Image (cartoon, rainbow, N blue to C red; front, side, top):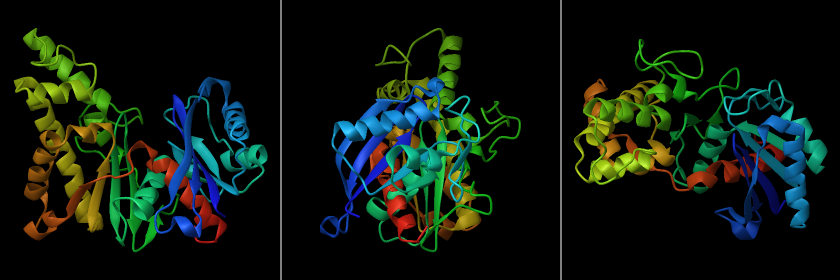
Length: 317
C-alpha cells in the first residue's frame, strides 16, 4: 500500500495529502503531493467528499486507502461524526461510508487531534515514545493521547478532549456549553479578547504592534516589552500550566508534545506554564516531564490520518 490519502476537514479548508508509505519511505512517511480546498460546510458533507474526489482525479492520484480527520466527536469504530463545533449542520454524518463511496477505497475516520497525535507519534516529536500527550493550541485546544504504545480513545471513542477540561469553574463560557474550559481560557479568540478588554481599559494599543488582530500580534507586542501583552501571556501560561499538571497527575506521560498557532508564542507562554506546572504537581520529580514542540506543524492530522488508515487496513487500529 505505497500511497494513502490523508484528509483533514476544517471549518474553512480541507487539507489533503498523498502520503508515500512504501517500504522505501521508512522509517518516516512523507507527503509527496499536498493541497488545500475550501470546505464550504454549508453545502454539506456529500459535496465536500465529492470535491476531495475531484482533487484526486485532477492529479491522477489513485490511493489505496484514505484517512479522514475531522474536529468533533468521532465514533471511529463506526466511522461516524456525531457533531463538530466547526461544521454547523453536520450531525451524525457517516463519514467513512460517504468517503468510501466517493473514493472507492477503504477509509478510516478519526478526530483531528487524535490523528495529529498519531502523526507526531509515528513521524514527529513522539517517535520512539510509549506514552505521551499531544496538545494543539489554536482557535480551539485539541488533545490526543498515546498510552503504552497505542492511541487511547476511551470507552466512547471521545477520550483526549483536554481542551474541555474545566480549569476555572466560574470562568468564561465555552462553545461546548460549559464554563471555564481550557479552550475558553487559552484558545486564540480568548487570548485576543482578554487583550482587547485590557487595552480598552487603558485606552491604548500594544507597543511595537499597533494592533491585536491575532495572537502573533500580541506576541510581538510582548517581545517589545508591552506590559499588557506580557500580562496576558503570563495569565495564559498559568492556565496552561494547571492543565499540564492535571495531565501529569492523571497520565504521567513521558512527554507532552505541544503545537498549534498559539504555541508559536514560545517562551513568553511556556515559561509561566512550566513554572505553574512545577508549583502544582505533588512532587518535584513529576515536573520533569518533557514539554516539547510538535514537529509536523499544521500537516500533522493529514499525515496521521493517512497512517491510521494504513494501520486500520492492517488490522492494527
